Amino acid sequence: MSEIYSGIRGLGAYLPEKVLTNFDLEKMVDTTNDWIFSRTGIQERRIAEKGQSASALGIKAAMEALEDAEMAPSELNLIIVATVTPDMLFPSTACAIQNQLGAKCGAFDLAAACSGFTYALTVADGLIRSGLYQNILVVGTEVLSSFIDWKDRSTCVLFGDGAGAAVISRNFTHGKIIASSLGSDGSQGDILKIPAGGSAMPPSPETIQNGLHFLKMQGADVFKVAVRTMEDVLRELVQRSALKISDINLLIPHQANRRILQAVAERLELPEEKVYINVHRYGNISSASTVVALYEAQKEGRIKSGDLIAIVAFGGGLTWGATLIRW
Ligand code: UT7
Image (cartoon, rainbow, N blue to C red; front, side, top):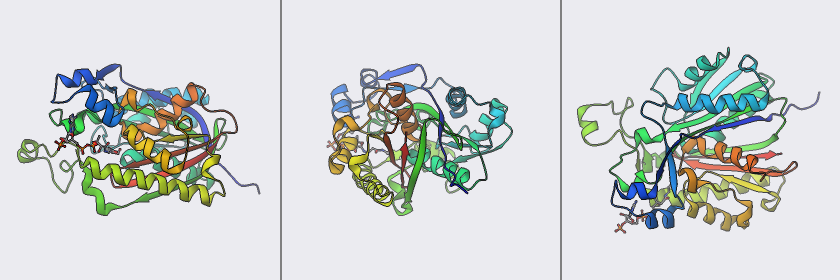
């Protein structure tokens, strides 16, 4: 019996229309366009309308991915939504998307922060390769603007809102998933988190007063681990797949900071033209980041048939992961 593979059959993305530029932020907090651009490469980010939830963004990306896959929602066997900014604690954002699509299948959320899409892709690939399912919708969607302290200049300039989606199928058309690798280190969970709102610290007047429902980050620490883990996970995966870093035609890294991407590329000795960057347009959109980047790279003609595409991500948890795709 021939081995089963999975791959990408459709891609979609949705970025909210509202643009918040660095110059807008200059009027909100003590910052400058120069500081933001030189330290992060970010020029602007998208912000969801008030009340526009993660499922509202995700459904738009999902519908485009299904259209691209030429697939009806009834053909889906599972929906996985990667998000750390869900509509609510439960029911899941995946169930909201399942309902709006009118799909008849299982649906669940997956929380791996900025590595969320890579994690969900790996789960989908495994379930298809096992023979259990044929078609799985993977969505990465975030409304980080709802969890940002807009008075904290050290975080509010970095994040944005957006969604991306991929239909992963046994009958793939766009690219075949070759291999994936995931990692985590919960001992460093404190350097990037939203402390309150869960069972460990339920919301109370005190948590609100102390701003503990907002995202907190020790940026410099995150920066160092991000560079090291993204390099390590990619080297391990490429070696395990009997490939070389130089075989990669396009690297799709998590878009958090242009300097992180440059450092990773330098350590891997990958020339800049082999690294896809859109952080200047959207900032850090967490689990939506790599899927939106993959979508845009394909639309811009940056991916050719036969290319080796490497997705690599890093985020809160800490979590990291990488996936190799042969287009
Ligand atoms: O998806 C994974 C999650 N996130 C990341 O991967 C982000 C990782 N970290 C980073 O991208 C960078 O560490 C930052 C962009 C967050 C910060 O850059 P940095 O070069 O590490 O700066 P820093 O944190 O060392 O701060 C330098 C200075 C500080 O002032 P002092 O203490 O030197 O006087 C900050 O107060 O910059 C100040 N600062 C700002 N100044 C103007 C911090 N934020 C701002 C700001 N505008 N928005």
